[in-house]
Length: 448
Image (cartoon, rainbow, N blue to C red):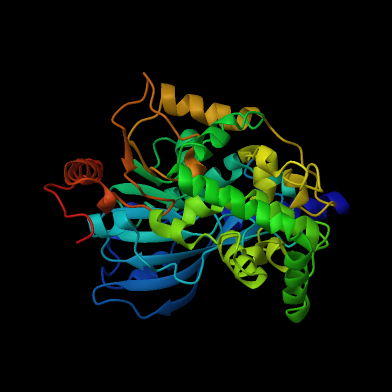
């Protein structure tokens, strides 16, 4: 009886996941002005709602049923959240992922969407937000499984959107776009990855330490080291304020192991966070030794985003830190200038961020494999990085086997960059390349 029930449940799930998609001719006969009806003919797709949008565009909030495990699609499923901004089935389509949950404005157009006047599909990454199984098996949170989510979604929606597809994302979303191409290189015509790290060897973080000794001016680098020292010299005053903030908001630090441990971790990450998110002119805001405790704490809280280290925030980002601890890797920063002030050896390990009941086993070959593919077999890839962004101290690089790809650097810029920030000649080259991938003639003005 148990085996019969198991076979029946498997049959039901397989029917939902792999039901026959209407033929292209049937899709073509659908009313062109009723994208809702066309989208709802996609098996496994559910319309959650429709929202107002700019003239000529329709915004649909959707859920698409995905297998928990693409290798065993009959063993349960979950709904992946996505938002569709529809322009026209005749236009190109941009697949965008932040690499996290959908966020508060998934309908906001990306730069490639604007440059191509394209449709946009924003996806939530598996296990983030509401896009996770009821009883998640964390071993199914891998770059291959997430890439297979994208592959399955693109395959289904190409019955509606038959123009060229372009994928894009920034930071972890840019990484996800590259991983998708690694495993399914034919799904899209081109990829634009902004500020995407490429941590090929998690045991060697010397590139990050070296970048921290090169970025900005010597005076700014010394000011950052000095404020790190001041923060730990004044540790008691700093952690008291941190604890008061936590108590007022009913925040806790059980995962990391206390406010003092969380604060030390934040201080170690301070230079990275500064160069990722602050403008180059932000050096003038670094508190000096004469600053009050309140001034030092307020500045550190803002730059390092201290709320991140509380349980209530870490729980939402557990999938992110799990991925860092199993495949993506993350730097641990050397800090000889803090000798004698550090109390928590090993606090920079990813284990600090992830609940102890979730196993972490690092797979050292995952990123090296993607890196090799980019250099040997990658094609139609565009990487855009910021000159001052320490997060891309180990960037993706083009190799002898890479074809029809570009690598750009925005001068004096941080983690938040765009094609529009490139020098005019390079921006024009980037836009022309993107439009060619999308099968569009002529050029468009970046930032217009």
